[in-house]
Each structure stands twice: as C-alpha cells, then as structure tokens.
Image 1 (spheres, rainbow, N blue to C red):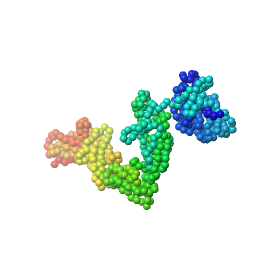
Image 2: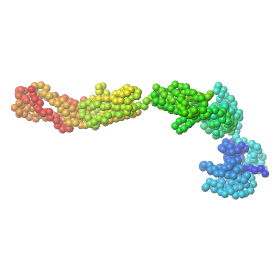
Image 3: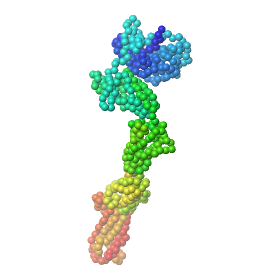
Image 4: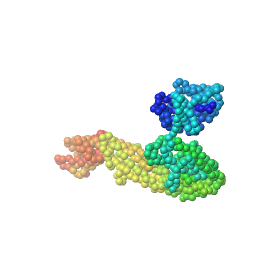
Length: 579
C-alpha cells in the first residue's frame, strides 16, 4: 500500500462551490503552501519554500515535518521546532484542534505532544496505517504526479490548481538598454571571488488587470536581491518593477540557487575564478574589497596624513594612482600601506589595481577644527561711566583664518530703559566681528558702561562654540560736580544718577562774613522735571543750571553749598567759592 501523509485542513460546511476553504499542505515539490479559495478554483501561495515532507492544519494548529525535525505553530504564536525521527509524519488533533499525537511513518513509532512544554514525549512503537489526506469534511486529497486531485465519496475527481499561471513577464535588462525574456535560468559572468556582479531584472505586466507580486526571494547563499521593491507589490496594467540580483562568491567554484517570483522559479548559476583576496584594514579588522566598488578610507584634517593598510592574499603586484595618495611596501610582502594628505579641504579618489582588477578608494580632507573661544575673567562688578576691556582668547593659535563674533547685551534694572551708550567702542555698536589671522591667539575689545544700573553680558561665538561672561552695573550713589557759572549767583550741577531718581535739590548761600544769606537753606522739589527729563533721555547723566534773583550787592557773596537728594540718599558739593 502506498503511504499518504495525512493533512487536516480547515473544516468547510456547505456546498463546495459556494463556501471558501483554507488550509496548508505539502505540494509535490516539497513546499508548504497556504491553500485558499473554493473547489476547482484554488490558489496556493508558498509559505515554506523547500524541504517539507508532510504537513497538516486543524484550523488552530499548523505543523510540518522536515527531514529530522517537527515544526509546530498555534495561531498567533511562533514556530516551535523539535528533533524528530527522519521521514514523513501523520498528526492527530484533539477536539479543540490542538496537536495530540504524531506518528512517524518510516520509523514506525509515535509520540505524544506536550503543548505546554512544546516538546514530544518518549517515543512509543506503533504500527500506523496511512489514512487519506483529508482537506475538509467529506473532501479528500489525492496526488497524481505533480497534480493535486480533490474527490468526494461516490464522486468524480477534479483538479485543484496550485496557482494561476504567471500574469507577468520577467526580463534581464542589458547594459545597452535592451531586455531579454527570462525563461527558466540565468547565468552570471565569471566573477573573481571577493568581487560582486549584478544582473538587473524587470518585471512587466502586459495584461489588462493588476498583478500582485507576493513573493520575491532567492536561496540563501552567494546570491541576494538588492535595489528591490518589497512584496506585496501591485503592478498596474502595462506597469513594471525593477530589482537586481547580486552574486558575491566567497571562493572559487560553481554556485547555484533558485530565484522565486510568486510561483515562478528561475535557476540561477554563477562561477568564481580563483584570484587574490584584496582586503582593507579598518577599525574592526580586515574587510574584503569588491572590484569595481568604492571603499571609503575615512577622513583627516588637511595637511595631516591618513594611513590605511591593504592586504593581498596571496601576494600580488599592487599599484595606486591618485593625487594626494601614495603606496609603500611593508615588512610583510602581502601588506602595503596607503597614505593620503591634502593641502586643501576636499574629497579625493584613487585607483588601486591588483592584477587586472581595479578598486576605487575615497578619502576626505577636512578643514581644521575651529578653536573654542574663552573670555578672560573680568571683575564681576563695574563702575558706571567707565570703560572696560575684555580679552577674547582662542583655545589654540589659529591654524587658518578664523572669524569670531562678539556681542554685548545690556539688561537694565526693572523699570529702567535701555541705554544705547552702553556699547562696544569705537563704533558704539553691540556686535562686532573679530577676524583672527593665522597664528593669532587673542583679541581685545573695549566697551563703555554708561550710567544706568543693570547687567551686561559679553558673548564670543566661533562656529557652534560659545563663551560668555556677565558683568554687574550696581546702583551707585549719585555723583555730582557743581560749578559757579559766573560772578552772578548762578550754579551749574553736572553728574549722573544710575537709578534715575533725583527728587530734591537744596542751596545754602554764604556771605563773606560767614553768615548765611537770608532766607537760609532753599529747597526745591525737582522730582517732576527730573522724571520728565529721564523719560526722554537715555542714561542717568544730567546737567542742572540754577539762577537766583539777588537783592543787594553780589560782591558780598562768598559761596554756596548744594545738596542733591535721590533714592540712594543725599550728596553735597561742599562750599563753592565765588571769585
């Protein structure tokens, strides 16, 4: 009796042509397929490409048997793989669709399946009578060479097509722009091991309906797909999709694999000629170079030297051409040293030749790293109405022309206005450019502090590097200078109040006899005129001219004392003599 693998698929209820069915089975080529559709009009996408000896599906549990392992998956879970006797198998499910027992036909043994542990119990010898492959209730599967036949008791067999014939055409894109139709095989040109070769493909949809590309893959090994679209990918009518197949032999000899596009299988072949292995030393070791490709050596500051080693096994003649590149031998005949240097910042390439093979090398010379700025530590507190020097220093003498920017920011005390006179000299601006020539280390700027209380920040910027210092312009007592304007009783007061708060002025005149001039101390409320003045003028400087009507002879006057009152208190001039 011919042995047939049992396949339990999802149960179908109702008329075969009306109710869809789905499940999994092993086809004649050893692939695990997902079966979907209705009787006589089925499609069968590939789930596992090769090596499936038997398989089954209960609607809750999927399993398949490879050469020496059993693979089990419950819905929504990962695959569990356990060692098993060689050959095909049958499975028994419980009422809930869980895997209960597995019979191994060639070995004539069976084992219980532990769903919690995910493993088989001890094998027990048992004679197993193969059963038909049941697809659904009352529906069975028969195999006839590469065909799958469905049948029901008392009915006629009917063909279950595995998949629709390809609705697309596969072409090789030639270098001259023409296309060659692919039938069943493609052969790569002879390629040196360690090198790569690419063949560009184009899928075309010549039909009037859209085509979905659900599978695009190649056997694992020396071939891989690159520059591809990713399934599922829809090709509209008259549309196309491109991808490349890359051949990278690791040794001399013959190579083969299978390219899958949906159910289309294309045999891919390639061969590698023996030749020296060319490797470049990098941070993590030696990396093989591919002829025709480009290898990046890295970067280095201009005028410095970048060194890399190249190894050719077995040793062979090596040449290098390219501006800024040199090649030197070492004590090891298989290893040469590559050097690169440049006077300017640039990206350069060189051609490395080993026998008849050519490799492109790329190196980058970068501009000198910008120095970092710093500001010499100044006093934390400054005097008003003064000038302050600030030294901006580089972390190293400039190796190339460097442009720094110095910016002054003034923040007045709350309620006080800005004062434009607090600025960098001599242009009275708050931002200046500071060009450093090659070899220069520091620059000096001078700014004036004005007569308004607040804080000053000076910031130096070079590229993305910043340095900043803060100064305080504290509140200072009112400063006053008084002069007599003439022989007449007239006084001129000059000073500054960096709180801008003058409120009262008092005058006391004296005779030459030492007595005070009647009526004695004269006080004047000047809060309003000073507030108006400060509101219209920046800074805290002012000048006050006071004139006094005189009854009598001015020659009897000896001098005057002036007192000014502000938020900081009072300040007196002392006696001013009249001469």
